[in-house]
Image (cartoon, rainbow, N blue to C red; front, side, top):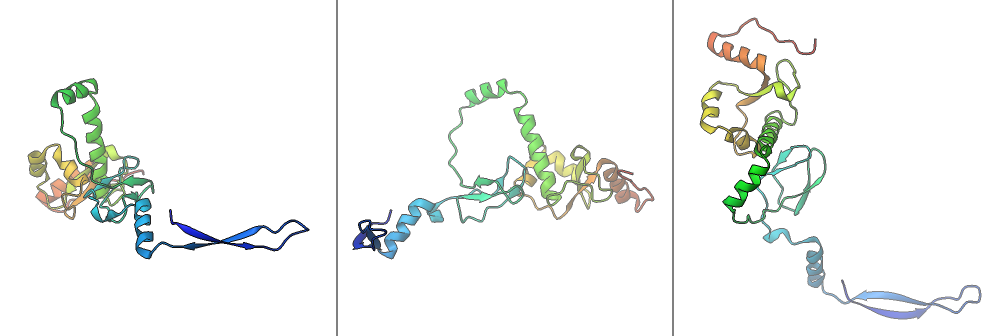
Length: 202
């Protein structure tokens, strides 16, 4: 806290009461010392390492931190998230296997999270088919606009959704389609425009 010196003065008496001393504080810290004290409170971010990508566990939004503060609000739900890059401890594989054995659905749950985050990234925050408007996440898929998705997905496996969710892969060539619209798109790539039309929520 800043150090100060007080200079006592006598204030006017009220209703016959004795005058009370009035103090005015004079800061004796230099500007550099004040800035240093503020850094102790706010945190100096110059030497901090930030995560390349941050994901919110509350709404599954994903964004790149600005690297200005150690905590940033989620752009979707507004909750503050720690964006610092913390060192990872060495893994004990035996204990990890034991921990995973007690939680058989842990990996599956995280794969669902990565899929939802990938859908949000490709859809720009909205999970819905770009053709018919289907907004049920379990019916929506990530489609390659120019084809070739099957080959890429087979090569990456479970890393496919992770790369998109972590913003490691550009999504300019991707879009969201429901399963019926995706099937029609595959036929159109092979046979040209077709008179099929999917109606959602009629």
